Length: 502
Ligand code: CO
Image (tube, rainbow, N blue to C red):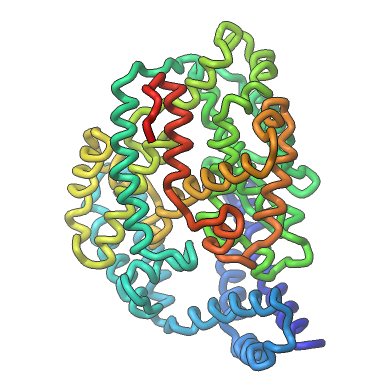
């Protein structure tokens, strides 16, 4: 075996273990009987241990060194794969065993405390363990290292190459432009949406969701959909990528958007080349790019008028009692209703970014030490007032609403907004590249959109960084302008705003 073949072999073994973990986790969320949970936790923990040992093994380290010494024998693609693995390997070597154990213990403790605090609606029950967590995360920044800002070290975990300084500029734009724009919208008459909350039969919703997934190009020979409490996508390799959804019979939004959103994530994972299984070239670039794939389908396509020109008649036929008297245009407006709200996961596609802005500012400040955990709930509530204009009535609906910080996931939140902003820029480019894209969508033909994503994004896996991909595709780095242009055009129509001058 050549060195590179040995490397491929090792990475595939790690992938086999990780994907087995994924299968067991998927089963845990969708099928597992109650009594099975204790032994399942043990199985998952054993496999996680094996995966970790393989990832940090001296054997792998030696092999990577040899590969780097013989880099001239490798193709460009092989070199890029190896570089990714080296980066990850070196990063893992920086952690002491004590630190890993301490972090893992604190994560369990923190998660339990968060659950209790949320149920009791009392942030003070969460604060002590969150303090420990923040302290560990500050240490982690020093362990990993950074050039400019400690938060950069954490961002890199989710969005390789992204910098705090970039995000400061981006979110300053969100603050300046989007806050104003949403104010302008709220001065106009609100759109009606009461028909979305009538009774929608569960099975009929399920079948409609499957039809939409099929239309998007989701391959049911390489995946399946199930029900879970929190919708997610999981991959066991590009030939088996599963999605889950949830159905609320009194709120048609839930199934619809989770189905399209997870479908977008799944198309990305199904689009990796099978020969790249286990290699960086067969993995997602970053969470932001992953999210761009779900948001593009959810917002740019799924919440567009062309999409419903293709699908609304069918939906009316399935739920005539709810929708027969509702015109297509009214239906389209109702699904794009903008209204400030308390809970991030229920937010519309514009005010959503204020939720992220608040979290970004707070977690950055926590990591740099400019605010402390004890001030968190107050700061949270003040910012919600300032950006969204709403009073937060309780910790449970405020600072305790998300699981992320209890898991130690600092640096994760910004990737949600990045996803939407990349999506807007990519979609803008797709419209330039594909003549009549929206006419095709309006006729129910999603193939041009699907093919464009597969050719330009999916098949490359991690071979390009997020920035390289964006520049290759659109000729420039991520630019917030595309999101604002998209938002202005769309919502001017929906809310009858005066045409914008810009
Ligand atoms: Co997502």
